[in-house]
Amino acid sequence: MEDTIHHAHPVAVRKAVEANAPPPELTLEDMASPSARVVALTTRPDAVVPGFAREPAHAGPGSRWVALMLPGGGACVAAALVEPAESSGFRADSTLDEAALRHSITISRMYVEPSYSGLDLAPMLAYLALRRGRLQQRTNAVAYMSDAGRALADLLDLRVLPELPSRRGQFARCQRLDIAIHRAYRAAGPRGQAVLRQGFIDEAVETLQQLVTPLLSTPYFMAVDDGTLSREQYIYSLSNLHQFVRWTTRLLGRAVSLSDDPELRGHFLNHLGGEVNHEVIIENDLAALGADVDVDYVVHAMVPNLGTQEFMVVQESLIGFHEDPVLFMAAPFAAEGFAANVTMRFITGLTACAKKWGVANPKKAVTFFASHVHFDGGDDGHWALTRDILAKNLPDDMRLQQFLNAVRLAMNGFIHCYASYVDELGIWTATPTAARD
Image (cartoon, rainbow, N blue to C red; front, side):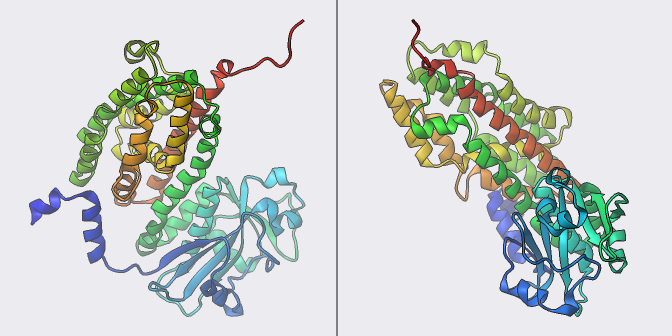
């Protein structure tokens, strides 16, 4: 039995573990509008956490509700409304302009079930609210609070901003978000932290999804969609992608050698097996585009452009310098996460472009992208496997923050490189603006 488990598919192992795991003490929810269970708590005066400036008249643009629920569809025991500071009551009270507040969030209101006695809910709820600010890439947490909220202010080390006016006995308080969220997570204690870790992968996935949209909105994907991608731009993209794809198996091999945990090592071995010779697929696609394509140059002499190398240095630094296989997973998490969001419409559009260029067999020129839509999506794709193994290897909030930074760096590299593949070769599709005399 032990040998069977050791060699089992990672998803099967995860499901076996989850089937025998104790139920969570509380579950997490994050929503744009309050659910009925949240409303049931927030309408009770005895549940209001004291100290906040006032009941918000309405939730402004970008606001979110976060909540802690009893498992199995049970009641809401804690909830908070989080708002971008520039569209909240804090702006009116502080008289600050939008520019001064655009890097800040405010916790407008907090509610806690007074009869609940299982865990210390205040730091857990504060963590969830601040996490929403982190997802919005905010740097500060602000709030108008009275002395009645001193316990929460001390918990998060919210400091008075002396230059701002007081309002109705409340003072403007502020703290850097990274410090406040660290203090909240630490104060939650081991049991509370175990509950909060349920949301780690959801935060990583949402962080990635926020960046998938701008990536798929780059000129490259837009040009494929409207049929204006040129043959030269496509060759340029494949040639640059080859520069890092050919290193994938070697980087994964390095990750295997650095993984002490057998399950993590098995994950990388499984991933490595699925990446063998993918650079050859690119070479075949290039060859299918025509005899004038210098594949030998791409393989032996080409240097990647800066956008492509931006992505490359992220993954090479994580596994080469830091020697950290878990953080290195941010690169395939980003690469395969966005590939899992590419639909067959993209492949159909790319094939149509190749046909328009006069390629003899268009399908043979798009096999790299077509294969990755197939390999990386679905329940057993690399994307799902990476996500599953991550859930066991991000033990605390500091580790999560490191991983989120790596994801953002990798995705920024992808955004820049895919934009460059069209922008830098715009001359190939340019037309005169006016006829010369």
